[in-house]
Image 1 (tube, rainbow, N blue to C red):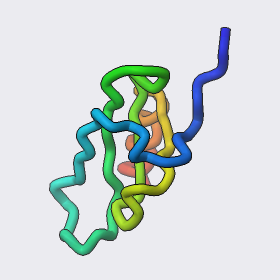
Image 2 (image 1 turned 180 degrees about the vertical axis):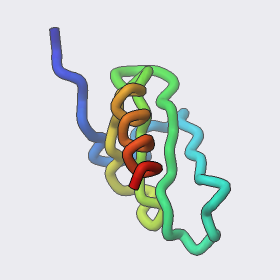
Image 3 (image 1 turned 45 degrees about the vertical axis):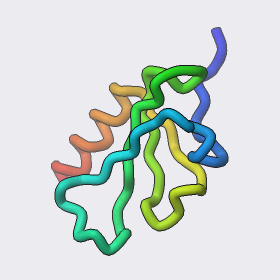
Image 4 (image 1 turned 90 degrees about the vertical axis):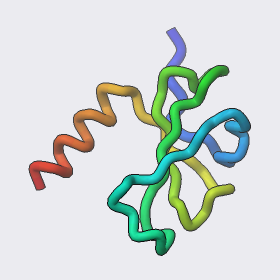
Length: 76
């Protein structure tokens, strides 16, 4: 079994991804964007990138890891 990728060096490699920002974003480019890669080796994972650097790297999370991360953020 191969290990899941942890990041994408250049997030623009995900040409068919639709990047979304939180509705809490102020529009000042100080947030993160998320996308669900539609196909390829990243399908089924959640990609997260810095909105200030849309051509930069993206981190990849499994659905369970992202849920655990956001739950921890909400708990403080």
